[in-house]
Length: 599
Image (cartoon, rainbow, N blue to C red; front, side, top):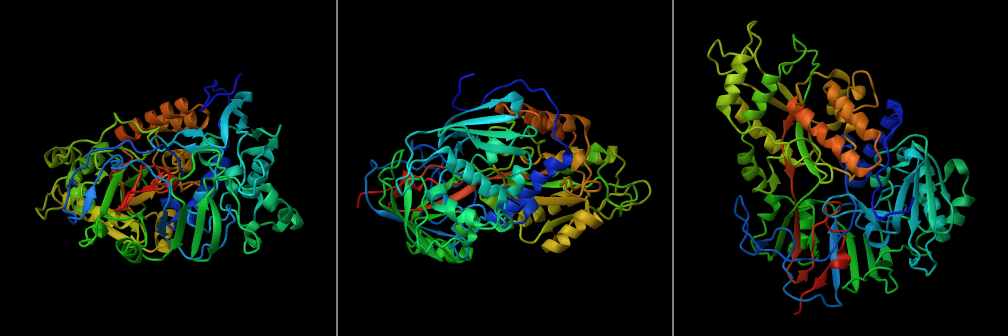
């Protein structure tokens, strides 16, 4: 079978790996993203890089609340008012503290840094998040999905002029797998071996099919065996880590369009790599600095010390009264929802949500379009159903029910919930009031709490007295893992290119009987389990997407939770900088596509 560019379709026979092994991968992803983004492991699934130059688009005003007059809103991509030109420099101020640990497996740097000078075998497509060729020009699944073959490009040089070979890839994956500081070692739970067949052909062997490996592991950046191999081998096998390497004596090298020219703990500087295998940057220099605090980063952008700002919130943009620039609201793999708990020990019947009509009523009572305007300024897909925001897998035909408090009231009455005593809160025939409790972490994205406040108001209008408890991380974990005495659990997070939320819906990952699982409310649906098994047993992306679209329909019909939409990313681009194009994997990754406008 010839190698092809993109994913392969192969016949899907065989069984899914054991639950415990799949759970190991899920736990590793949580650890990875906590390190990368600094949010709760159970709430974040983050991002990577890729794409094409600007096409141009039509500016439009914000659809919600007003923005400062100097901020122009542009969807899709910035209009190219000038042709790309060579020269100039750009600076980004990013979240975080010290940036001096260049060990890629530890994820101790802001991802903007490794994504500027390192590259992966495959990149997530900027619009769909499907795997696309990068350092590997082609790949192929073999042996019924137990073997993955990559063919590397033959024209790639490291910044120290050594050629890229499969020995670099083998070494890199050894570091990700064995480094004592690795945040992603669990992603290799199903990997049997990684071998260099030739200098260009790489073979990965699996003990069982891994539906996400191509998406989430092959997209990790490669590092140079020539630079780090000797240091690695001199360490004891039980204590190997690149985190002790002396980068003050030799600059880290990569294969990317930018090469590091100097660095300190607070800032990394890059210059254009003129022998880059792809199209070199338009700009001459890139600087990435770290500053803690969103207000400080906003001030840096206002003062011209940062040319791109992301992430940024709508309310923060409204503070830029004396600034000029462009605001890009762009698609993101972000999701917000509140899952139902079907096993609350404090509820006499075990749950308030056993009757599907009650769940549907709660969903129909929410005015999503209103909170989209009030909280996000309109920059959110408020009508999106489900929790699969990756475009390659999302089912656009699955929708949320229309806002209708009247229909919600009818459903609640039919389900036996009536306001017998006239106090505005419905009761069942035994007098038990419809007073659900929702829990949310206090370090979740701020919009989630604002949305929940409006959900409380909407549900009250139909006789559901929802209360929201905002909890610190330890208390939150105790509630959902140990006590389980809540009725809704709210999440907001970004997602990796591959689908990792199978343990959210699957009954095998019920937290009550699987401590490595994530199903927080005891949701169970045989059709959902079958769709998850189909996904986990598939290797062809189209087969995976078909299974996930079926899963979305199932959990929307047998409602899993209250869908709260897909927030868009907001990216601020300073005046005089052109060429920005959105990238769902990592919005500011492609700095090599930017150029400065003529003075």
